Length: 76
Image 1 (tube, one colour):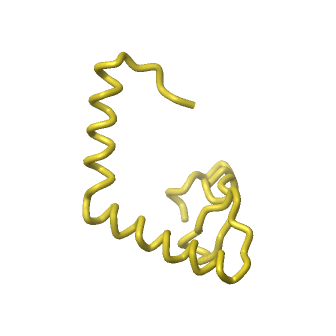
Image 2: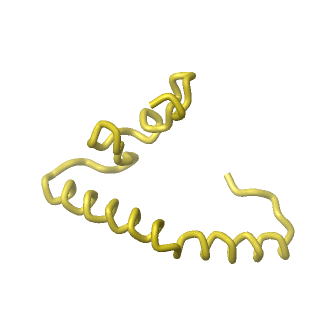
């Protein structure tokens, strides 16, 4: 669901988001996830609707990987 922002605010947010996505830390995380997804796809894992869980080191549904158990992700 998108945020309801004015055109000016939307442009500012796009600029901020792009700067955040280009940080070295974020680029390293993106590259790692791309490697994992490509390897899993090659191994025949069905990845639609799944994210990598770094704690359990496997792909889980987005819902299962978001800490929806009431405790949140702070208690992992």
